Length: 119
Image (cartoon, rainbow, N blue to C red; front, side):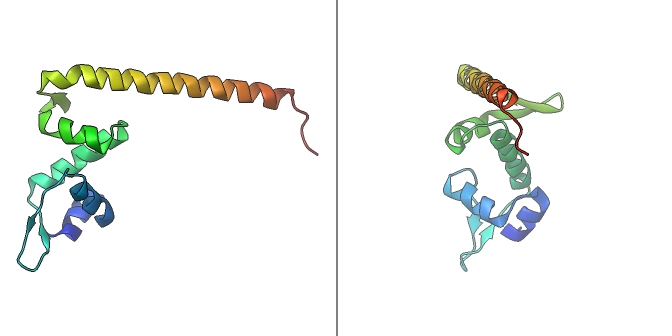
């Protein structure tokens, strides 16, 4: 399939698909004309990339994680145990950043509450 069809079937823009290729997340075949050609498994691969990006992973991390993903009970699971601790650490870092943002929002709420309303 060509890039436009992959974009349509995966719900991802053509620009994003080209970016994924630049980041070594996708490796389409090339026709002599230079056109990219994708296979059926690339639709699932792009969907998995989207899930991992939504989870806050960088494309650099996704390059390492993607080959280790397997379907498990309707979700994704790691088949490479060496990445487990890295993902736990990344999750913990995200949670710490969320806590810091909540504290910042609470401090801002206090300032807003103590401020007179403009007319």
